[in-house]
Length: 147
Image 1 (spheres, rainbow, N blue to C red):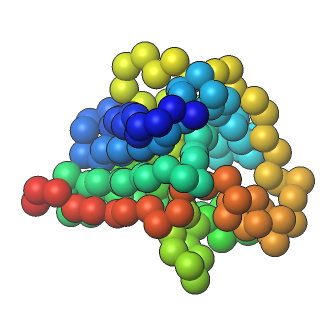
Image 2: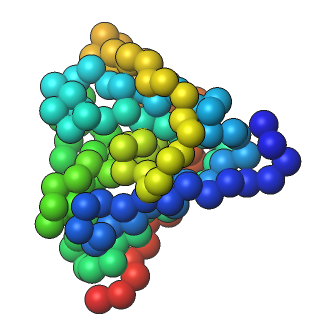
């Protein structure tokens, strides 16, 4: 851990969606979790998160965020409605919205560690939710900027 927050930024291909992920962890300490479900595999998704971090999904045009649910239907996968890039995933809990970033959406050389396989489809719905509440960023902000 470092003493100050580092903010990693990213966007979809067309720029209608942006993400800001702030963390006190060093980027090399992150090993993106490459989900092995068919949806995430087809999108090349590998997720990072920090339960002590901050995460904002921002749409630059109203209606730019599209959502998709699969499997247990508990989590919302967030995609750009224009270019189709999978930006991240969120789960709405009574204590707030928790989320993770698709590391492939981050701009520039992030210096992240190597990806590791994750198999959430082997978990029950309760086990998935428990894992999300432990690993993901709490109190995710969803904002609209522009028109």
